[in-house]
Image (cartoon, rainbow, N blue to C red; front, side, top):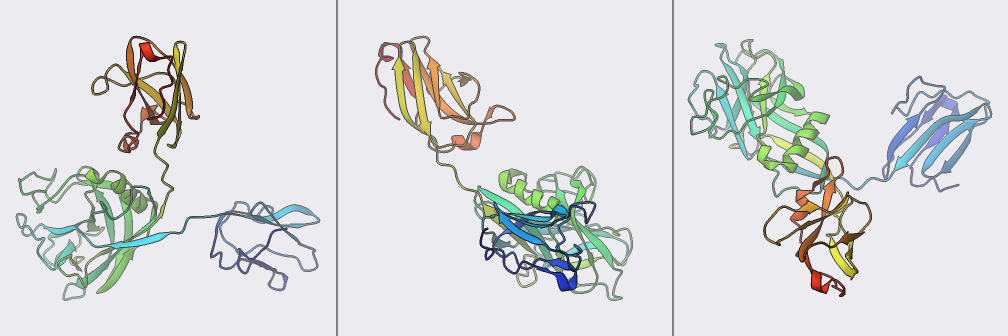
Length: 380
């Protein structure tokens, strides 16, 4: 029987006829199975009926808590997994601007506010926001939550009409963008103001109803998390989001939001993340040559591995010497008078080298000459 203390305040409360779980402050539930009580597994910790007078047994094994009765081998089970401590960073826009149908050639990034929705005259407005993640988050970051908070600083004098606003990922680069063009070099949007499915994603990343002045938060969604994670992996594809009203064809849905020119009211992107362990770089520890083969051994790196060769160290194509492998040792047949070899991490799904791993210092590929293949080559 394991100590219950890591799982604070877990108890079975027969008097209230419910199973109660409180404050898993150190660990996160991975699975909750209410067999025989609910038709489908659930993440709710309440509602499991307990019959008065029935004997319930509680056991803790292998980080799992199980509740059972003489008539049920397993009534309820919680299993837990340790999670790395989450970190949080709050970012403000590195770029933002308004696309305004009334002034289609005006670049409005210097304004203290952004506009989105439809004006009293029926002109459409859309806001662009981009957050620079490069240098802010490590490359081994896993995004677990992302929320965007915006602040309405102005609404129509009549109060305006309430509407739901969407965030959609921008699919193309933009700079000094206006309603007509997306950059100072007059590169046009596919349609003035931008087109869904071409300039902006057809998929909504997050939505929230917006009414009067005040702060509003786009809660985290799988799409928001994916957007931020992809921008971290491929910063060259980070074009930010467009903010637009679902009712932008309806007059007086427009709202003014604080821009980066107004730091007290600007948007804030809150990112919650964890850091994955960084694998030790590949280090060749030994090369032994015997007869017509060389055995190479190494440490570090992340499987799968592939040994590759080419005739010259600075030119030519690296050619795999065999299938990828999980272990850190390989015997290579020697052919020709000389060859250069390297060990590369590969992606199992495609059997292609992980190019990010090549940026680490793996050492120079080793050259094995035919005349010296009986010698102990040593480590790199």
